[in-house]
Length: 261
Image (tube, rainbow, N blue to C red; front, side):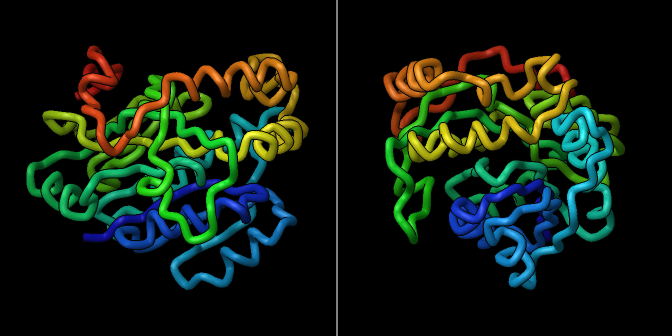
C-alpha cells in the first residue's frame, strides 16, 4: 500500500521533527510547497529522500488562503496511478489511528474511497520535548468540530476536490464511499507552546492579503494577547485524553460529511 501526503510549509522547522516522526511509518512520499522559509525548513526538507519540495506559488497575490486552497485542490492529483491513498494536511495536523497502515489497507479492501477524521485542538503550555511522539506523549486535546475534516482519499476514485478556505469542509467529485464508522482523528497540534504560538500568529498575519483580512480568514492571527489567552484557556479547560475517550461520544452526530456519499 502506497500513501502520499501533500502539504504547505512556512518556517515550520520546530514542527517538522514531530510531523515526520508521526507520518513516516506509513507515508511513502511527501510533497511540500514551501513559502520561502528562512528558518532552516527548506534545508530539512531537501535533506530527506522521501520529500519532493518546491516553492509555493502565490496564485492570488491578495490572498494567501486562496493560494493555498489552489494547491490543496491540485497537488494531490500528481499522485494518481502512483498512490493508493493521498493525504492533504497541514504540518501541525496529525491524522491518527492506532494502526493506520492496517486500517487503510482494510478500507481499501472494503471499497472505501474517502476517510473523514474527528477533530481535536491539542493544547500544551510548553513546547513539546525533542524526540516526542505527539499522539502518545501529548494526548490532551479539546473536541473541536472545526478540525473535523476529510483529508484522506483515493486519488484514482476522486476526480476533483473543492476545499473550503482552511479546508474545514470539502466537496468531492467522483466515486465517494465513506467508512461505516469514523475511526480516524485529526489531532491539531497548533496550541503547543503558548507564548511561542502567539508570536508565530503575529508573523503569519503579515503573510495574509487584503482578501484574507476582508473575509476574516486567519482572524485569530490578529487577536490581542487577552483574546488569544482566553481562547487557549477555553480549550485547555475542555481538554480530554484523546487516547482514552470514546470519540463517538465526544463528537456527536450529525457530521457534515454524511451527505457526501
